[in-house]
Length: 309
View (cartoon, rainbow, N blue to C red):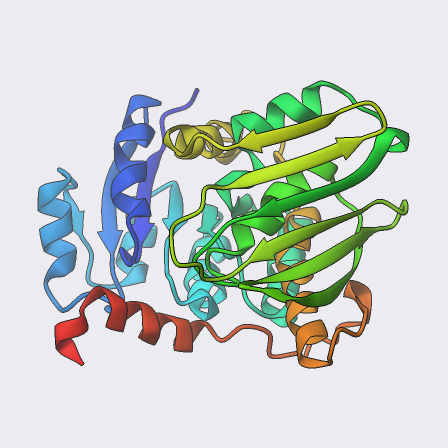
């Protein structure tokens, strides 16, 4: 594979530090980093660069654009993703946007439009590409065999909950048509329907203890339980993304299909707000506010640095 010079934008989560060694093992070079200061104080960019052996701690995104072939955007404020991606897209650089891709339809549509215009752009949840999902899909069980499915995880409804939507999307494929909030038993339960008539549920939200990523699948001939091995998640998504970002493989999944997970989550939020009304994804206007990335970032910072309240 062609060796890429890779940059990192925003260091908010554990993902940047976890991605760096895997990227290097795959033959690429992490050459620069920029942090906008959403979570960490001034000076953290240089600290991160020093600790991870990265040559350039950039003071602006524009400086980073000039140093790299590709970029990974890790902002926990997903409302910044389009803004941060734009200069790299305009410069013809490959872009990976960490989950969630975006929290509102307008930003998601911008990403889709960039993809249709030829931008090398991908990202999202690692659960879409995890080995357990891949192994299930490779079994080639026909849609006519489907009975019902349940996918779940803990922590919250979007920043973490998007993993459940993405995992279900990976298991069942594209074609989500609608979402319907059905109630709460500690977590929220949302039923998703596909255009071909298949249905399944996600169960998401905070619990008293950590829950693994899991799926329970019923077909006409079997019942299967899947528990994801978290230790293999980042390797799986990078093995799918990096060959495409290097220009040596087709996109692992188109942006309009990739964004279905986020749109399903937005539809679920609207359904809950409207007392369980069925919400069709294609009926959601671009003006819908969706999930507030700035508010989440404030909450995330307060959780990470409780003494700074």
